[in-house]
Image 1 (cartoon, rainbow, N blue to C red):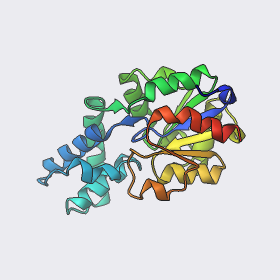
Image 2 (image 1 turned 30 degrees about the horizontal axis):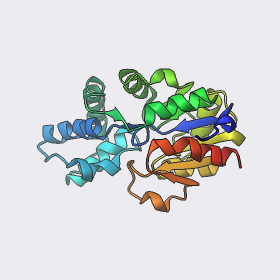
Image 3 (image 1 turned 180 degrees about the vertical axis):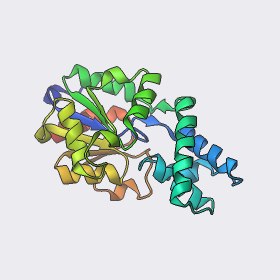
Image 4 (image 1 turned 90 degrees about the horizontal axis):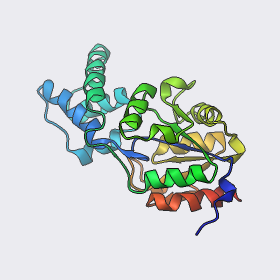
Length: 229
C-alpha cells in the first residue's frame, strides 16, 4: 500500500467535466435539444464530446458550427439561456463519477489533502451537479470560471481555487483532462496529472502531463510522487 503521508496539507485541484464526472451524456443531450429545436440534426455523443470543457457558450457555438449553423451573438445569448434552463433541470440524469473517483477522493482527504474543484463550468451549475451526486462535501472549495479572475488556462483560476481550499501553490497538483488544465498548471507552476479518459481535442499524450493516469486508483500514488519530489 502506498504511503500517503506526503499528501498531508497538500492541495489537489480537480477539473470537473471529463475528470471527476462523465457529464457528456447530459451536456450533449441538452445541446441536442437546442439543435433539434432549431431544425438541425443532433450530434453523436462521441463527435461532440471533445467540445466540452470551455463553458456552455463555447459548447453551443461548437455544436452549432458542427451542425452547419453559425450563430450570431444575439442568437447565442437566447440559446445560452435555454441551455441553462434545460441543463439545470437535467443535470444528473446520466452523469456519473468516473470509476474510482469517490473512493480516491475519500482516501486523499483521509491522508490530509485539501481538495478543490477548479472548473470552467459555472459555480452554481458545478455545485448543483456535485450536490446531486453527493460529492460536494468532499471539497473545501468549488471555484467555477465566474468565481475566478479569469477561466483556465489562466493560472489565476487555479491559484484562486488552491487558496480557497486553504492550500499553497508549492504543494499543489492540478488534475485534469485537457489543454485548459495543462495550461493553468504550467503557468502557475503546479504539478500536473492528466486522465486519459476525459474530453480533449488535442491527444492527452501531447499535453505534457507530469503523470498520465488511466484510472483514479492511480492518482494517490501519482500525487505522492509529485509532492514528495
